Figure 1: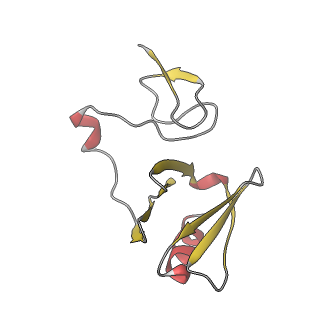
Figure 2: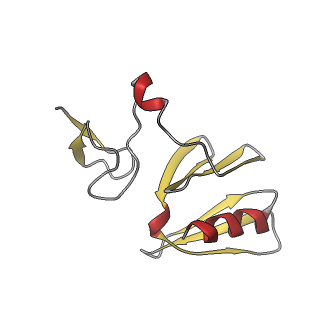
Length: 114
């Protein structure tokens, strides 16, 4: 077992972990046998260079070239306004605005997983 740093919170975790014990961020694996067991996204959108992939247990998003992931159990609410974006508020109060073309679909998909 080796210690690696979490991509999200930078704390040390076991390389055998599937999620960070500190923040719940999924641990990215490079082993081919692990990649084949990762579930397919429930929903994906790529709009204006921003990507969101919704999996049963977490949300991955890429904005301005930076990729992040958020465990689904840390989503407090999802809202959208007149612009082409959804705003995800976490249980910690952080707001994440992600440009998408189908706001209602994204919101409903996330709420179906909560």
